[in-house]
View 1 (cartoon, each protein chain N blue to C red):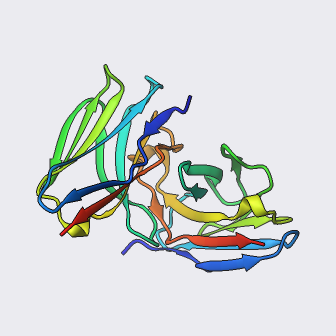
View 2 (cartoon, one colour):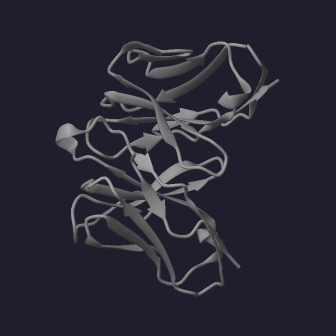
Length: 115
Length: 110
């Protein structure tokens, strides 16, 4: 069965702290994504990666960075957390373009609160 | 103006009703159209997928795409309390980057 695992379901951090959100997929997918989900705004793409050590900015990359050292793992980093980064963060993976219909497989989400 | 517009609701209907969920979009290059369902405290999962215009039926669910009007719909027949969830439309030109609607929160009342 397809599985995307996000290591932390709920986190509470203080302003200025460095935050790591980890995501692991067991489907050997090339593509991985980080979204944030906010009421009334839907899902917005932060960063994505088509291959190991590759990354591309999405629609809202400011304040975030990512790391993909291994194919199965994609990390989202908040260098200095701010209150406006309080949100639900969703990791997803998918097959490459040539064999993909656009289906994303999502993890269960990490709810981050920044105080 | 957002590329994809979806009424966030909330929408509340009695069990057994027919539910209609809709999205409009502005980019005529979109070719692949999807509906994702998201239960509370879970990630979204793909419910229906349609390529280009037309209808697609899967059990109680029907997805419609009208590219001339830039309008897509999801119909749920004989709605059940287990259908209560947030429904997100999504679309793409064919590359990986999906564009999502805001999501409609649906409650089916027993």
